Figure 1 (cartoon, rainbow, N blue to C red):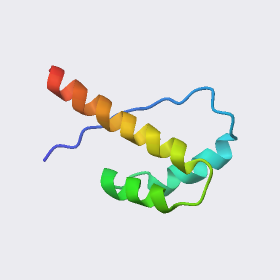
Figure 2 (cartoon, one colour):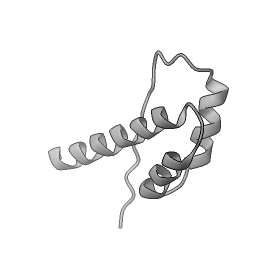
Figure 3 (spheres, one colour):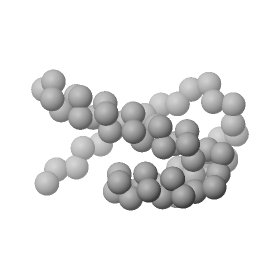
Length: 68
C-alpha cells in the first residue's frame, strides 16, 4: 500500500492563520476518512474550509494518479 502525498494551497481566506492552523493541526497526519469525519464534528469556523480543502486534495490526487 503506497501513500500518496498531496499539497494544497489556500489563498484569499479572510480568517486568521492561527485559527485555521488550529484546525489543520487537529487533522494533520490522520487518515483521510478519519480527518473528514473529525472535521464534520469540529465546531470551528475554519472546519468547513479545511474539509473542502481535503476533498479537493483527494480529488486532485486521484485525478493525477489516473493520468499517469
